[in-house]
Every structure is written in structure tokens, then in C-alpha cells.
Length: 462
Image (tube, rainbow, N blue to C red; front, side, top):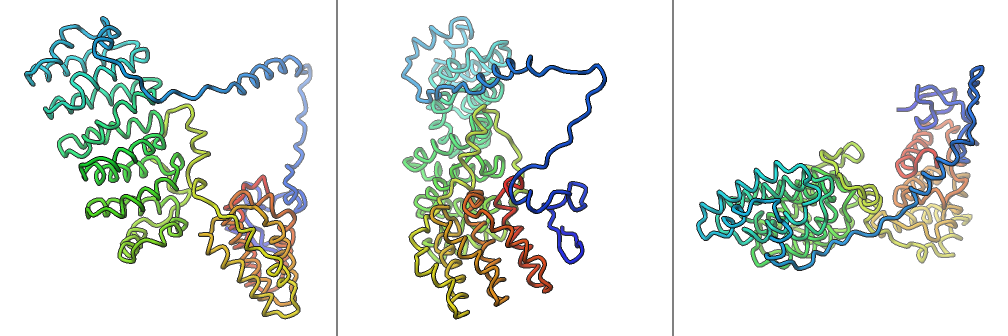
């Protein structure tokens, strides 16, 4: 991972893509400025005027700034008569008549015919909502025949997977019925597949937010236990980047793990285990108040799902156009961060300058304790003075304090994430100076700190 060069160990992020030490100076790396690129020599007679492109660029910039209105996700009431009127000739009238039949074989024949007609539609996008409304009404989610239920779900899945855009209001129309179908072993596979297709269409974040309330309030305990098991597969499929993790963890803590049904508790433990694969040890800090027996079961599940970090690649993607914004808002960054500015007291900062080396060491240890109390997730608020105090200890005459400080700086960077870049100007230059120490252990501490920093901050921001 690292190369030796003279007396310095050159970390990977200071090398070129070929692996050799880069030509960028330490100063340019630390300033965050990109190196000046050589100007390509224009071919003779190949002068290109840039003015003509400015207008085009201006238009594209205007288009990029266009903000779409938020999507209306709450469906309005619509009676069967209006649905039939809007369906018109889209679906054969005989099919709709048979869907109303009291004879299950006739309803099964009708839904099979409906499926064929929908699969044959050329302009499905224009009819998505009205078709979903028809299915939710005829035969409807109250249908008792399993074969008819399965066909209804299959048609719904086809529409959601085929339509260019599947409106969120259509998802809302179907979710309660699908959650009940997930609880039934005869329709579970079909319903879970449909929910996953919905996730591909609108993003798992929206689906999760909506099903929390449905599962929590439903009288059938299997709606909750089987619903959580579907969430396990959804996290494995899509990862956590689209989810509000704090909401999911709270739901599992307050509802799933507190359930009197063993199946629900076990499903919740399994889901938290899968989350650990994507989130890592950070998740443990939000479950410290869980019963000891459950904590033991969780630790076992964590071992089955070791933290994979960036290598845990989702198996499915989201088609929705707003998926990129939901990624930014979700994932690990949706876990709360604590404001530690109140704990970085003048007394603590002063102790960093104490003539007694033991007091200076205790002040460094105190910072790590503050990070532990904050579940190793902190805000950048008020940390400028803290970085200044830590920076001062990098020149300490006691080498053990210097190494402890390096480790602590890495811990602070990990706990703060990308925000560390704004609060710690200049500290990297002092960290890099420690690479010149003749003690191997000191150099290893520097490299570990730089690894933690690299994981928290993008390279072009260093």
C-alpha cells in the first residue's frame, strides 16, 4: 500500500496513478490546489473559437438550474365509475365485467386476460395510474382467491418495472395491500418481488418510510416480522445510501426489538446485522441501551456480517431521476452527529500546555473519551480550538504524547467525516513532518492517521 522513499514513507494518496511518487509538492497538496496542466499545442489551422460555445453553455446552465416541483405523492379518492370512464377502451369491457364476478374462476380468467392486454400496450406510460387504480379496486386487495391475488401482484410488478416513470402515488395506493400479501406465505414471494420493483422505481427510502407506519399499526404480527425480513433483502439489494439510517434504527429499536414475537425480534436482529456490513461498528453506538441478551445476539449477527465498507456493492440500482439527491441525504451521513463544543472547555484546552507531561497525556486521552461518548460521530462546531491544541502536541518533547496525538487526530477525522477539512487547516503539514522521525513506530502512527484522514476527506480537498 505504501512505498519507501529515502527516509520518508510515501502514502498512496501522495503518489501518481502509476505508483511512483507524484510531482506535486507537499505545499500544493496541502493547499488543495490542483497542479497547472500543460496547455495542449493547437494544430496548425485548427484554431477553435470558444465564444460560440458560451451561449450553449449558458443555456445548459440555465436548464441545470431548473428546479422541479415536488411530486404529489398522496392519491385522491376515485370511485369505480370514474375509473371505468377513464379506462375507456384501454381494457376490454368484457374483462372489467368479469373482474366483478362472484365466481372466482371468472375473475381468474379476467385477470389473466387483463395481464395480456397490459403487456401488449404500446403507450403504457400514459396509463400507469389509472391501471393501478383499477387493480386496487377490481378485483382489489381484498380478493380472497390466492391465484387471482398472485396475478394482480404480477400485473402491478410488470407496470412498475416497465413504465418509464412510476408515480409515488401509485406506490402509496398499493403498499397496504402488498404488506398484507407479504404476511401470507402463498403470496409472499410475489409481494416481496413487487416491493423490490417499487424500490427500483422510486427508491427504497420512500418505501421504507411508508411501510414503518403500516407494519407498526397492523394487527397481524406477521405483517411486521415478514416485512422486516423483506427489508433485509432490500438492504442487501440496494445498500444504505438511499435510507435514513437513524429512522430505520429507531424503528427496529422501538418496535422490532421490543416485540413480544420472537420472529419479529429475530428478523430485527438479522436486519441490524446486514446494516453492520454497510455501516460498520458505528451502528453499535446507537444500540447501547438494548437489553444484554439482545446485545449478545446482535454481536453474533455482526460477526456473520463483517464490515465491508466501500466494497459492499449494492446488487440493484434505482431508476428514479431524484435518486442522486436521496443518496446524498441518506446513508451513513443520516446518522446523527453530536455537538461536542460544550465539552471542549477552556480548562481542557489549557491542560494541553501543562508543563506536566502526565497532564498533557490526560488531555489527549480526554478527547478520545469525548469521541466515545458521542458514538464517534461529531459535528465540526467549535472544534477549531481543539485542532489547534492537538496540533501543538505534535511538537511535544515526549514522543509517546506525539504518537497518542496522531492517533487522536485520526480518530477525530473519522468521527467528523468530510467536515474535518474546514476545521483543521494546516494540521496536515505538521502530521507529515512526523514522517521524518527515525522511529518506525512513529512513522506507522503517521500512516494510520493519514489513512483515517483519507477515509474521511476526498483527496482533492487535502
